Length: 285
Image (cartoon, rainbow, N blue to C red; front, side, top):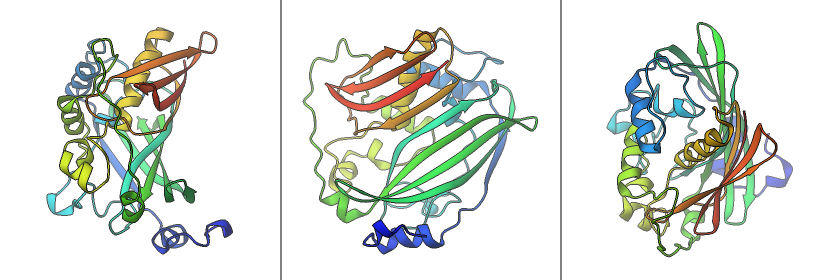
């Protein structure tokens, strides 16, 4: 039921919390080499081969459902989906997540991915009402759960988005930046992850409709790149990851990754775009 403190929340959100139940989302397939090899190229990671362990979050490039163009909304997201609540005109953002690697998944494995919504919450943010939908995805090999991936999806209403005017950081020297997310990178990552959200490749839509000052860098892309810093620090892949998106990162502006160790096996990585924190990620080996 809707908490008492959210009695004034929009009906579109309270209806979801009170009455909506997600459908099961089950996908399966063999993890071919090419998607992981393509992602390693985009991230500047070491080359991968068949049989290699799949790093945390790299399953983002696998097991996507077939989409029909007619089923996509104006924003590029599916209008109806097993884990997507039906909200007219909603604005959808990636808020963060948590990943636990129980056992390794390897390139070439046959994997079953089972997804469900485990919670819906309404919150009042500084820019208006938010609907927080937490998804849980379990990836299994031969009946054993190997990876548990929870992700927080944030929904906003168009009127709140229209009233928000984020500032665009200036373009400074990017020669020494760890990551410069330009249009090519955003387009290729959208294609590789089968993500049609127009804020990542349609500048006119991002600015005129969703109120951003430029193209938006994918939250998972920042998390994946931060995990590369964790891998370099640990000398191996992380086993547990928790990350949160703090503010949007925008196209063409350099991103730096600040690593703070907490002993030999844990670390915090903060992604900053010209001093502004965009993502914080805690990793444990």
